[in-house]
Structure formats: C-alpha cells, structure tokens
Amino acid sequence: MHFDYETLARQLVGFAETDSHYIPLLANASALLYHSMEDLNWAGFYLMRDGRLVLGPFQGQPACIHIPVGKGVCGTAALENKTICVDNVHSFEGHIACDSRSLSEIVIPLHDAEGKIRGVLDIDSPLEGRFSGADQAGLEQCARLLETVISWG
Ligand code: SME
Image 1 (cartoon, helix red, strand yellow):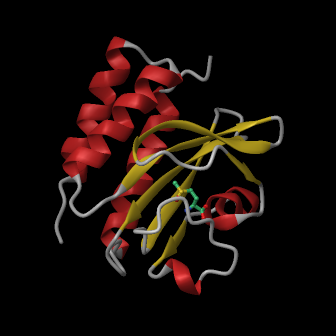
Image 2 (cartoon, protein in one colour):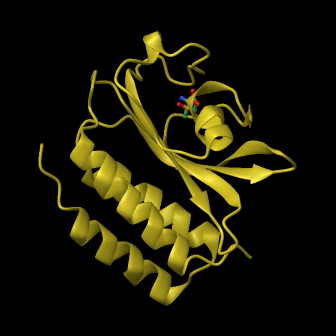
C-alpha cells in the first residue's frame, strides 16, 4: 500500500511552525496519522516520565496509562532504543492488549537533541502485517523530523 509520507512530513512541519510545544504538536500528529493512514485503530504517543512510559496524545480507544520500560512492544522499543514492527501481536511475548482489535503494530522511539529517549510513537492496526518496510521507513523519517522541530518544554 503506497502512502505519501512526504506530504505527511510537510504537514507535521507546518504544525510545528505554529507551535512546536510537544503537547499541541504530538496531539495534531496523532490525529493526522490516525485519519490519513488506512486501517488503523490507534495512533499516538507514550512519553517517558519518572523512568516509565506514560500515555500521551493519541487517537483511538482509551489505552493503558503506564507502561514499564522493557514491557510490551512500546517498552521493548524504548529499552532497545529501536523501531519494533510486529506483524501479529499474538506472537509477541508480553504484548499489552489495550484494544483487543489490535493485530499488528509499529513502535518508534523519539529522542531529544541529546539523544535521550523522550517517548515512543505507537501505531496499531486490526490487520495482520499492516506495516511494510516502506511504512517503517516513512514513519521513521517522520519521527526523525519531529525530533528536529519539537520543543520538549
Ligand atoms: N500495544 C502496546 C500497548 C499500547 S496500546 O496498544 C495503545 C504494547 O504492547 O506496547
């Protein structure tokens, strides 16, 4: 499935030009991702606070509020400091099921200017294998771009 990540990236930069604070920027980023990508049931951010991930701006069903680093897909991506793309969450040991419809997901860490992890982008789909290598590359590019424009406050 082709998706226009360049347009998405331009829209993210446009939001940041108005206000780069992480709350409005990540709130609009989650809405943009959720409404422009097909076949998603959740798109949003978990932010690092006091050594664990805490629910941040998102679109979708209410979700678990705290995720320890190392737990679930989000916590594993934060611990290993790398993107994790899961084709079927039932085969990922320790997956945290916030919405039972989620079947595949991709989680990408976000860093500050010093390289410290400030949170993760988490996108979930009810379809198995929803996220291709091209999706991963496009979303990672958007995450890198967000890192350059965001103000962590
Ligand atoms: N799926 C995540 C938990 C967050 S919800 O999907 C929104 C995980 O296992 O990390």
